[in-house]
Length: 272
Image 1 (cartoon, rainbow, N blue to C red):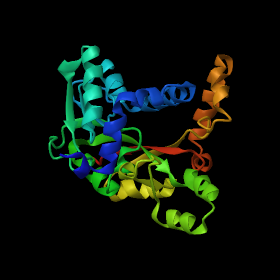
Image 2: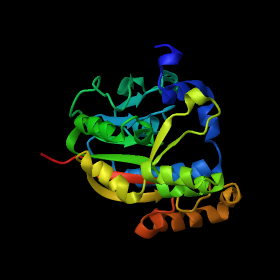
Image 3: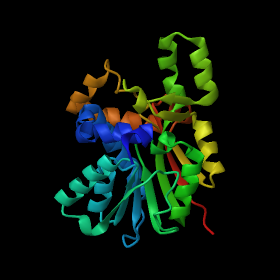
């Protein structure tokens, strides 16, 4: 496929794949990833013999965590360059015997077998970056064994309101609130892919409409250490664990979830 014919989300991630990890290597993202893994662990399946999915795998961060935990993992991403980085990371760890790689759009997972996987993660909002998030969820559900868990993140619509307030245009704000759509803020026009954002209730409705049972919605992160003014707070190792304790408590509070930058949803594919 020529660059011209690639979807914008693929063009962008193909271009940045080589330096992608460096963009997320600081105290905030280490804090964020530690929280993510703590939130995932209680939902990991007990049976290591059944493969799991890493959807929107990027450079393989979560796929590698799952591989080192003993699972066989199918890594899926729309970007061939990202898949290449993930393969290299897995090869360096010597774990290729339990890893598969698929370059695929989440709206078309026909290359993957139906009802094969016992667990799936979709970190970094790949469902919201799909052209049709509802269709992507239905595709994912077909690949999961009934009763399996999907854990995914979505951009929180309410967390983006300040951006549109700074833009100063009531029309832009109104359009965003109505559609929930924004775009990735890259300078390259051809790489400005759409991002679908959701309030907590809209996220719940999205998953339920696709046939999932929503078990939990957390905010991540409720304490917005990603803001420049607060990032330095996480450099203090003496306080970092206390910040994490507070964050974990707030993340479960339905009223606090709405102020988080992202929503993390735990959903179950219904049993037969």
